[in-house]
Image (cartoon, rainbow, N blue to C red; front, side):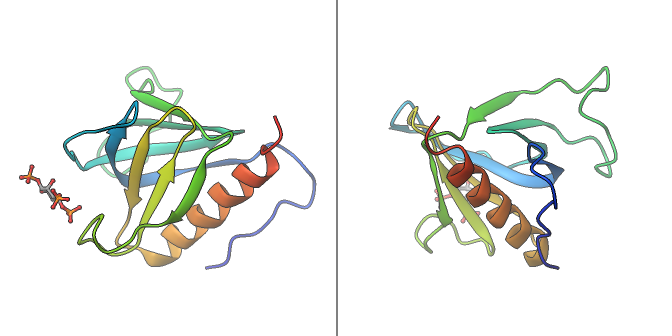
Length: 128
Ligand code: I3S
């Protein structure tokens, strides 16, 4: 499925369930801990909350506050190389704060959409 650009320039908003792990924090390697996370892209911020069941939970709901957020401004997104993970369809996100994340799904169309959305976000907010 193709990523569809909104016709007008409203702030990017996208959400869904992805498998996520940090691999680096403050520039230091950390142990992988793949977790299914409810993921929201809101403006230039990427937010993660614990995924609840089938992924139908809404972020603003009472039990799901974000566990973790990253600022994408000045960051980068690329397809993770094979040595980063044995999984398929893995995106590597690097932030200016020295956090590196891997995000993944078995659904390649879904991951492609996220890749495009994250790249668009980073280029849109490059000069802030
Ligand atoms: O990059 P690694 O160390 O091979 O990552 C794998 C490990 O983190 C493994 O956990 P433990 O070694 O802590 O038991 C995970 O279960 C795997 O999923 C990790 O590798 P993948 O290739 O799935 O990202």
